[in-house]
Picture (cartoon, rainbow, N blue to C red):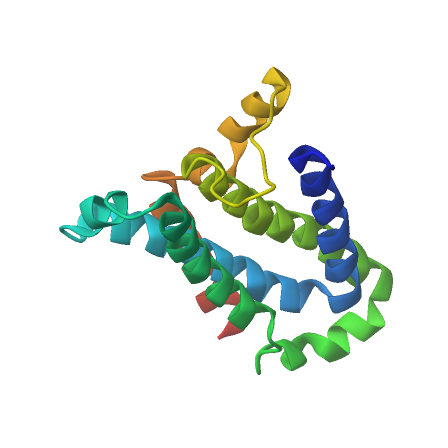
Length: 173
């Protein structure tokens, strides 16, 4: 049996390697899609009447599945190669080392956002999947306070979404 904290760090390393191979332009678009997913989750749960109560009435596995599905869908579409990324391909080829390092950095952030959010949803729903047990170590439980929905939840995610869209307008248009 492997601890969830070990899996978390392994996935951060894996996402960093993927980010270094894909480059910063593609990873930046993934970052935008993950920030959008966090924003949508916060807005849907907080501001759409009845969603929070109807979700709370469901089983734990359904709660985890619904929230994770939205996040995975936006991550999937973020990782599928978009049309905008080839615009930066020529510049990225000229500066290959810088592109890899920035891609590595953004890949680790994307891994943190994706895996950290899924772990948070798993923790909030009470670890409903068979074979996955809650962490027993207090240091790992303290780590859960720094997962993305806790750390960048409302109102910070609203500012984060605004900053990402300003970045999209300035850089990509």
